Length: 347
Image (cartoon, one colour):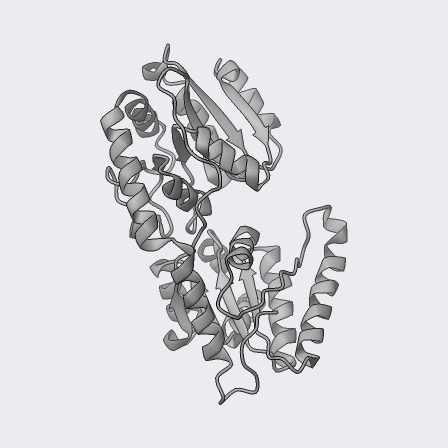
């Protein structure tokens, strides 16, 4: 979510000034309340300025709902227009498991936002039908990304490189990927896997060792923006076999660079990517199908070229920054039209 706002801040949006505020921070959880207080103070300061402001909250799930809900409530109490941008992958699974009081609090947060921005139809329908948000206040907007700075240059004679980009979470399907790479059909093939993302890789390293593929798997850890771009530029294929997703930025960034993609048709992914045209789809958890898709990309240059070409075309149609920034600017202006007490500058 931070990358989205960083893209926006770098690209600009016709007179809009972005101030990015962390509500949790990237360090230990014990300092999270400090970041939350700082974010609240920034909202209070924005409400006191003569220039208008909008609070644009990027929300995931679990603790993010609590933190961002408190900030949205504060902004509304101060009369600052709010935009709730939902990026959560598993919130529809979480919601029915909550107690009635937690569901009521969540409904109040979503219903109180000036606009709810979602990534695809499943979340629009859920907010409207289950949470009770008015349909007129829900906007489906695809994220935009900038073209990665690194230039892709795939060499002919080299080990084929699969890339996984993402936090090392259970829902991302990394155990499925490791098992698929150890399948007999890939035995003897020249490949390597680069796993880039934050999280504890201990159990995954043990799994790779137990599958006898540890010499071909590189756990690179968390990468900054430049290193991520370089990893994409060096990849022959991006693999994201997630059980649950929203609309992962790594897929959009891979499309922008023309990196072929293997992924699962979950979340908003199948609304945009097409199987065997702009991506290869495998069912979540289907390790045999995943192994077949890996082998196909490894051995079929025609398929790789088609996915690369169509991925770039999809990026140009759907994910470039100018229309994304313009759409958000329009929402900010709409939130702060003359009938409202303020007009638009995100806080």
